[in-house]
Amino acid sequence: MSISAASLITLLLLSSTTTTVISTVELPKSDIDLLEFPLNLEYLEADFFSWGALGGGIDSFEPNLTKGGPPPIGAKKANLSPLVRDIVAQFAFQEFGHLRAIQETVAGFPRPLLNLSAASFATIMNAAVGKALVPPFDPYASDINYLLASYVIPYVGLTGYVGASANLQSPVSRRLVAGLLGVESGQDAVIRTLLYESAMLKVRPYDYTVAEFTDKISHLRNTLGKAGTKDEGLIVEPAAGAEGRIAGNVLAGDKNSVAYDRTPQEILRIVYGSGDETKPGGFYPKGASGNIAKSYLKT
Image (cartoon, rainbow, N blue to C red):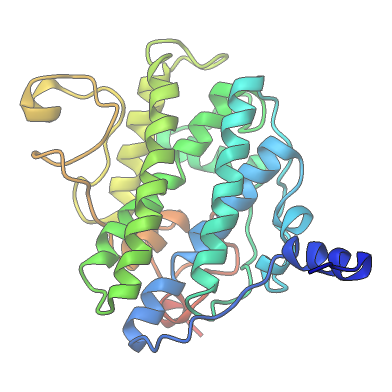
């Protein structure tokens, strides 16, 4: 059977067009809320990685995924080596897929306003070290700076997926979260491994090593989360390492090396930088979106 040139062109255009189809499976409302909530983190990761590696965000590559939400504040291309740029570009495209996978399962919501400016990350780093760094920390300045800034992000999301998994009712929801968790965990492992290679090097011009920065960031997240230790830096006391026998901590986990979990409230406290799920700020100047996040916002 022959195909006309016009028909062939039509087929090619259709095959290259990204479409979003909402699942026809009926999910419990609690599942829908728990699946929509992580869109907040996925939007942030997608834009941060895409801008950092490729010089443009979701709007440049998959504009339909934003659902009309505003562009992020202050995001820009980072000064990265070819290796790190390639890895981060892979992360970016993976995050586009994550957004699509969630939006094909639940309706979702427009991208919230994100603050990905150097000043936003500088504020986090200042809070982590307990003083104003001079010059201000710039996440876009180098491989190490960008990887430290990246250290801040995927781990929070993956602990959220671990926390959500126990509360999901539908097999469809559980399968989606398991798949998302697998890749998010992989991203976090790659970031931690790249940083671990330089763990004892100073982050110039500051008087802190890479490992010290990760420890301070993790301590800050534990403090903001207000739920005990669910975060660990790259080097710990041997008693706190795997099986209580080793200081190297390339993967964070509890006493049995099982991933930590976080609730939506804990995540909001961290990403707002306020320690309070009712007080937006940090990466989300106007607050996160979705029913769960909005339920905590003061009117």
